[in-house]
Amino acid sequence: MIARGRTEKDVVKIPGREHPITIEPSTERVMVRAGGRVVADTKAALVLREAHLRPVFYIPLSDVDPTAIAPSDSHTYCPYKGTASYYDVLTDDVRITDAIWTYPEPYDFVAQIAGHVAFYPSRVEITVG
Image (tube, rainbow, N blue to C red; front, side):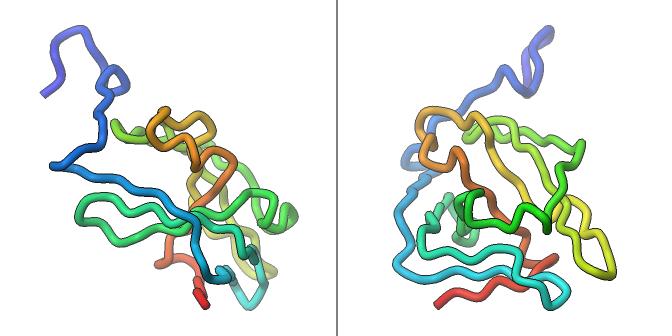
């Protein structure tokens, strides 16, 4: 519950025993495809593991094809990571809305993910290894 006069964005939570977050470099190549098009390809991904959630690969934005993405107007908030911005993925046939998220100014305890993006595996094909 958020106190009266405060907003959701006033709530900042620190990862710990009850909600652990770890970030480490991936040792594998990560490739993302959408509509048969390679959207991202990297050997420099980070793996973020958060509590009971599945691991997420954060890819350097510099390893994403800039012609395959377009900024979205969407934003969400995570009390552990900060405010997320989104990108759409563009294929020859379709625009996949909000398929990518990023934390442009993540909180200090997850600062490593700045300059990186993550893809929703339900919206694109992610190959690891």
